[in-house]
Image 1 (cartoon, rainbow, N blue to C red):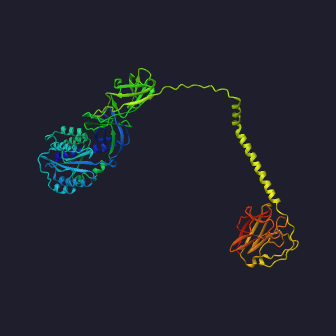
Image 2 (cartoon, rainbow, N blue to C red; image 1 turned 120 degrees about the horizontal axis):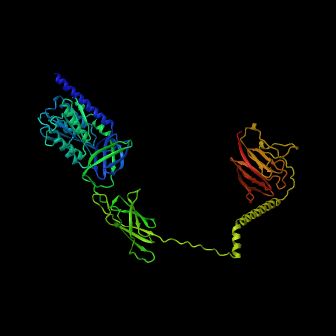
Image 3 (cartoon, helix red, strand yellow; image 1 turned 90 degrees about the vertical axis):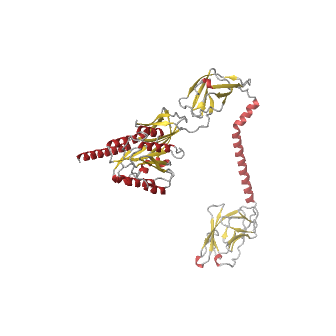
Length: 601
């Protein structure tokens, strides 16, 4: 009894140790899987997303193309579940484990796939990757843990070989999930070391799930195997068997993905060390087999050639190449401009590779380059691909002859040229003076014309007083003899009529404004009985013109005046015309601007 308790305590400690190892792995950066298909390299891991400084495959530095969480990468995962069906698996665990596998399949994303292997006395593929989810329950019903042997590593190798057959364009990330008690660890046609090497060469991680009720040695060996492949060990008891794989898909989504690219697609077919260096001076490594490559059918080309110095030319290739650092790889011919001979050869004395861009080389010639057209062709220069594609084109460039500048001494200008130069120099002053003179002439002419127009009016005698005429009561205001006829005239609002107020501005006397309210007709002239009396202008007739309100519109009518009535500066005298606010009335030499306002009676 005491011995049994002792072993139980040992198993508990082993379980805690295993869980501690898994937790420690979560805390430290680690690589789960590196998939190499040259020139593309994809790495999956924990804690490698934030602090990546440099990444190498062997000695070659890789270009970092993308660094994202796996959940954002849009890649599928193929899961290969391996279930131990030996009778050493306790019955209390087994049925819950089968249910956990079914539940796990229900958490997969649409593009993910699951295959199921069983291993005991033999290894069987129970569910292939393309099976339907409805097939799983029926298959699970047929699986029992009754076998006497455990071909664990045989099953691991078979599953890894099958996963390797999935094309990379379908799925790059494949994961083994091995559920076992770990007993009979060395029994099988393929020993543990061979299975481990198989996973390492294929770059496939194995996640080990071991039951607590087994020997500590089994747990240790099982865990070491999983961690070496890039996976982890989980030790579980009876109470965890039903939820064994819950959250596994989410854990895989939480990993980081590094998409990297090498300079060429050359695959060494050997194990090379993949290395991540972080900014905090950590180094993460994993040995990977570089055996896959993508076909390269694109040859390298010379992008440009240009003179770099008197005896030097810079070439730029479209991609990294080999053999470009040898002078014998270049043939340079040139055609001299003066002779037209194109059989001249420019000897290349040496080649150097640019320190800033490995795709650039500098050709140094024995002598300085002469003016002419140059052609560069290459031999034995290839890209870094498995196909070793040669450079496919030639490059041309031209060196022009230097331009000799001649200095011309200008001749002494003649007297006539000096006169023309002076005129050109001061022509702007002449133009301004001419413009000022023209403006002055225009002003004088306009003033004389205006004066002549005013003086041409016939001066009229002071009109005799006409008896007041009957009419609208609002227009029959009688003035006293001593009243000035230019006073302001106002309507009487108590009559309740709807009227318009006119303001007549004397344009020749800004201080003189005539105001009058009207409902039908007003007269303008020198006579005292005019509603607007302008007695001091002898060019106006006694009753010169009238303004009539008719159907809401105002009309200006000439009253057969001597010097005529004009509107808005038009030189043609009017008989009748419509009057609007802002119009200017001309009567002899007088000019009145009309402003109209409506008054509601």
